[in-house]
Length: 166
Image (tube, rainbow, N blue to C red; front, side, top):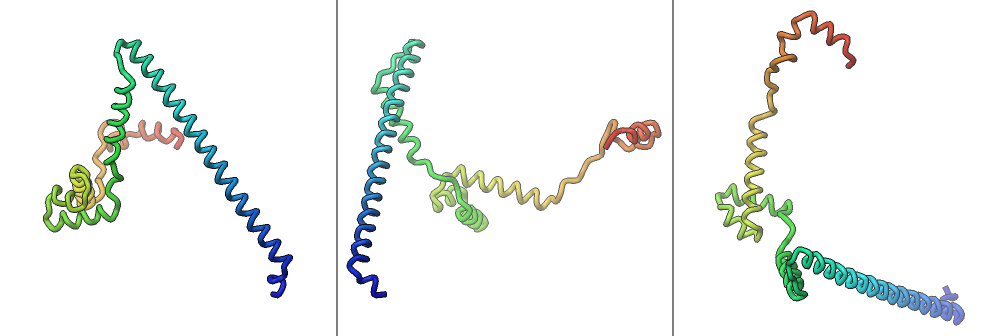
């Protein structure tokens, strides 16, 4: 354990830490420069796409200015901002529990802060699943035509079916 306090070991440790710090900083600088280059490339692509959209609009005789493209982009971004993920498993169980207590879909949606349409869809799907579960497995119906019981009784069709590969 005394080797830790040896001046040569401390010097090697300081050099190793310095080298590690140098490597971390150079990697960080390279990643940032690569990200900046990628960002510049994306801006160039966006400019190229805008030019192509302007050309297409000009071909169709529709004049669209740069400000209108910006307005469309900001409208799309603002419309996409309030979107959130759907109802997760916890909220589904909470919604069903509230519905069993007698609350309306609107009350459930407001208390769980989810869209009313999602709550209604959840309740409808739950109702359909419960109806199918309570009804039991589906029963096969009687066949009519070539696969009916009358055809099975004839010897001709039985011999023709026996020669068919399975």
